[in-house]
Length: 157
Image: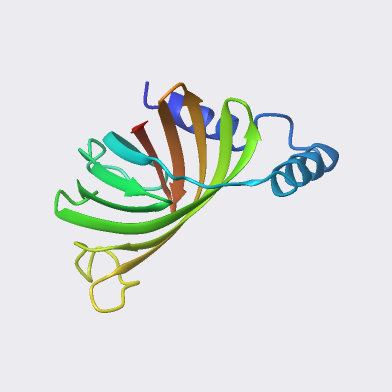
């Protein structure tokens, strides 16, 4: 199962081949589409991660959060089993009827300097491309944060 996640991540971020013509089509298709205005409340119900470059890290992060109008706060057990708090803004672009492409920016607390040296006042920057798959009021979001794939289950109402 563990070897399946890298393959899935490639499919999630490059659902077609990686030829230059296909990537140009993908890029133009995304950024010419309208920005999605999230006016609903979003609950993040659970989350898991897959570490691409590190082993022996926590991958059952128990992510719980709430968001409104693109802004979100959440809490989780981070890769080092410490409690972290996340604040972010998530901008999404319509891509297909069933999927959106996005960018999540913000900050994460709870990392020690020896675990993550890139910090300012104890806050680690968050800059993560995302892809969300919609199924009625639920969506599954995948994000790439440094060398970590993050998978969350969200409910909007």
